[in-house]
Image 1 (cartoon, rainbow, N blue to C red):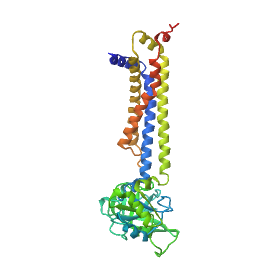
Image 2: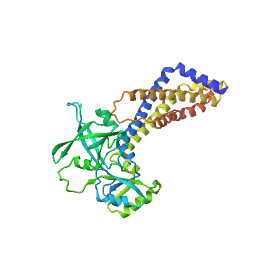
Image 3: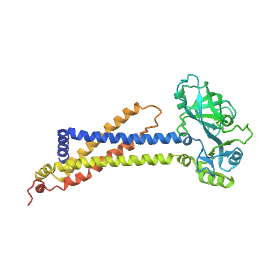
Length: 391
């Protein structure tokens, strides 16, 4: 009986004041839109920063010890590789070099702005080389071929067997290197750029250099990806590597990408913005229903004078809060979906199922949370005082 009466009273008032409640739902919808977009932006920026590193086949990453876990600052020599592979517990290891280049390709708009891509040097068949989704893996360390990730393929229209030309500055002079596309990988963004993967020796030959060394100096690269015989021995192998080989720092893959330049700062900033947005949502919902409560103190006093219990009044108010909040969240989620369908592909926003579900559940929770004050006020209304009959 209490449930049916409270629902009747709640929806009767919602309908009679539908304009007022709908405006609050629209405000909640805007908050929902902002929260979900911030969550998508955080995921998109994180992915653009860490995608390649997070997909490494090995469990550990080796840096130069004074590089402060910065990939571009780290410089390792070819002589380190045999020492790393001989350490007990290491199944395999692959060198990785990173740089940035412009490319030219058939069908390119001559008036379009040149696009920069990450040029990553890898050792074919070893950790660090991504698996292809079409085509073939790299043939050898000196092969004049590359793998491109799916983003490069989508942006340029290049396919397996096509030729692209890398434009690289060598000692202040622009040089051009034609390379055949051997395969296409899944998206492998590296520092916010789509990636092109070249065999390590080919990468060293074509990567931008301030001076031309004529191939006389030792091959250097940035990091080493280490695959373990038993991933459970991660801590022990890290200790062995750093003890037996001087001048290196070893961390797991998660630590490696979390220390990428700007990664932690981006995520903390976006999380702070999300927290403030949710707080604003609590204050908006709480403020509206508090004002709504103050305007109907007399009505609540009359209901209580006629025999309405506190649970009935509280349930009716809770129903209004939950319904208003639910409508706003649904409108906001639908608006987010429609806007996401129209976003250009170069905007780094990625929506994942768990991320959206968590955001929506959090938003559904803030409605009742914001209305707790008004519900507490309603159950404490004294009928005689509300009707002005108290002495």
